[in-house]
Image (tube, rainbow, N blue to C red; front, top):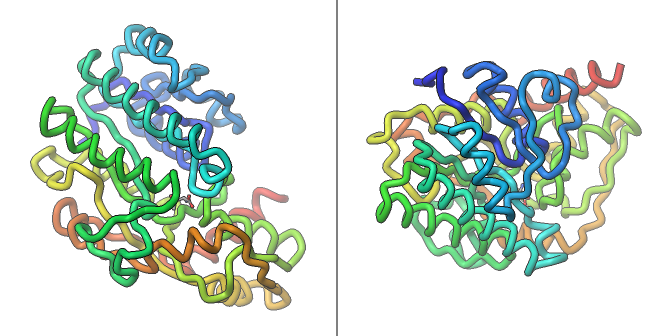
Length: 320
Ligand code: AKB
């Protein structure tokens, strides 16, 4: 249950997930109770107008401390991260932002007695020796991207802060997230958002992954629901304190193209795999999320065709 008097901080509020999650939280807790914070200003007017925005660098613990003293946050959602493809271009910086940013938030939460922290992990915690079908919650994890390594290490630290200091940290291993409101930035799964935009603009798309590359994916409304359900579950139901496997659908570029062709028959896809192919090939193709189902009743609502219909409808409306 949401305690509507809580003050909530969303770090990374201008990003793909952050911009949508901030709006959902504002609907639940009231606009003025949810502080959007990012290094970049919010792009969307609804985000700008619906509540406070603070420009913040998660690598600046002093500024974060001042923010916490000002607002007395009860919950923090820490979403700021360098994703998989961008991370490979500057591994040292990706490690710094992803790890130091997490430590700054965890320590801030302890110091300012924040009651709950949310931090996203990813399917990138898995690697080439992980079983690729129905990847279990507990299995071999040998990530080979700096993003994946930082997420795996982050999971261990979240569990450590929970076990040693009693900090209520919760986390999900997101698959590729697809939404129409904001663009992703620098991930390996980004093609599955871009393809819808290009389908409407030019009825063609050149994909940076090969046609039969299966990856786990999720439509944004399901990702928002999973995040909020986990954060509002009674603490004793949250049994996994590293990060929960989370699943909705798995598809290949060829299959998403076929789904789009049901609405736009002339749509054509071509393939030009680049360095992101190697990352995709090291990740699972499908995920076993039975722990999330059992512990807090997780169930997704959207499959590929339902997502395609909704994406195209909403993108068309936005382009009018
Ligand atoms: C990425 O592709 O890097 C992200 C992810 C799966 O975590 N979307």
